[in-house]
Amino acid sequence: MKKKNRFLQNKTFVVFSVLALCIILAAIFAPVITGGVDPLKGSLMDALLPPCKEHIFGTDKMGRDIFTRVIYGARASLTATFGVVALIFLIGSVMGIISGYFGGIVDAVIMRVADMMLAFPGLVLALAVAGIMGASIKNAIIAIVVVSWTKYARLARSLVLKIRDRDYVAAAIVTGSKTPYMLLRYMLPNALPTLIITAATDVGSMMLELASMSFLGFGAKPPAPEWGYMLNEGRACMQTAPWLMIFPGLAIFIVVVVFNMLGDSVRDILDPKNE
Amino acid sequence: MQIVIVLIGISFITFALTFMSPGDPVRNMYTATGVMPTEEMVQETRQELGLNDPFLTQYTRWLGNCLKGDFGKSYSLNKPVTELLAGRLWPTLKLTLMSMILMVIISVPLGMLSAVYKDRWIDYLIRGITFLGCAMPNFWVGLLLMLAFCVYIHAFPVISSAGDFKSLFLPALTLAIAMSSKYTRQVRTAVLDELSQDYVVGAEARGVKRSRIIWFNVFPNSLLPLITMFGLSIGSLLGGTSVVEVIFSYPGLGNLAVSAITSSDYNLIQGYVLWLALIYMVINLIVDASYIYIDPRMRLKE
Image (cartoon, rainbow over all chains, first blue to last red; front, side, top):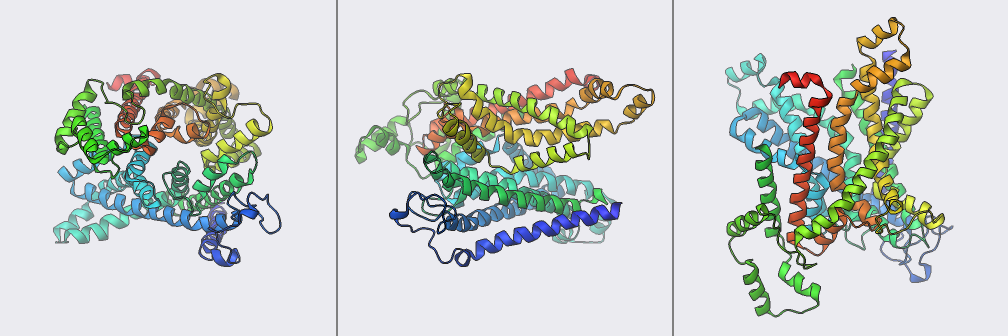
């Protein structure tokens, strides 16, 4: 029974990693898929066309093809999301491992800062950071990273603390292992699987957070195709042209579903509790 | 004590952020009133507002005023920040409470059903729906609901500024959908944990009716983890309503904050951030305190 179960889980992993790969490839080869249509140019003659043969998702009020913009929008969303996840993963793990391994005042300082971030509804601070520094994708990324790294730091710290006092760690120190070696050889591999699971399951929610930032106007800047911002533009013409908001939203939805499923299956495969 | 340290830290961070920011509040203030300021006017106003003082002086002065309950004046709206925030607090609280109620109404029965009928079709259906619900951006849900109920059916107003039940319902429902998806899963896990306890088997062996076990034993026992979640989601809701408030033009705190940010109204942003942090922490304290009433074991530990 158990064997079959794990096999099944692996199958979902296979299916959804193929789908995720398709999304990434679509983003990379956007010009090929859209047949060379420029996502930034449109003719006002074609403004607000409902979905038809030439424009399968319709056009927006500048006459730009929605399908093209949705496909190109994958680039912005995916790079920003992966950037955010990679950064919080890196910063959080490093801070957490250092904090757990060295303890003392370093630990106290890092953890108090983490407390502050945790004592706080995340989006509020992220909005404040992005708003104050000005609207751009880069600032939206920084804002979310500033707020979210603490989760990983806490996790890494607790994982390090679990093995910090084990005999084999003490033995390694006694036999003269240098600190960087200790961190890389013992602490990091111990914390890594759990951290990777967390990162994999976080991709979807980070994407949603970035999209809501741009929706509010604190992310991508106008002419660039980005899903959150396209929804914001679509909101104004909701009555006359609902397709403006339906397709970018659908794109976010589908991509988040795929990455959530992928994250969940990675968790199921890596989580030692399931073995 | 912990709270004081954290609050001071947060106040420092927000103040430092606004201090480092590139926008100039004085120029923004003048542009808002439609005046093109000369260089002297800008300098004079800066002097008047104390914006030329060194960082720490400004910070301590600001903090001192905050402790007295004075968060300064909003540059863009020309009103005291405290008054503005207080005026917007109630609508946001109303929205939060309404969506929490909706969330409980939706998620507790679904979660229970899903746990009790584990691995049956109804469980799979509920899990599937909650999974999709988690992946929907809440602003998209809001827009779709608006499209369906306001544009096509005309059942609800498009702009929810009236403050009555009708204008509250759609924004609250939007928030509730995303949250109930998460919460239903929590309810399911909590109830499943409780169902696998020995006393359930024992009670069943003694011939107690299953429905009785579920309602009188399992349900009360699985409340504890749910209350933690509940408290946490009140907090994140208070801060997370901005997107939905903007969509429905609802006159709440989040909407105020977004407009404050776009017009770089620093006093207002700082006040908003501090207020929310305070509210959030008070809620967490209440949640912690409520354990004592729910779980008698906690009283013994004290």
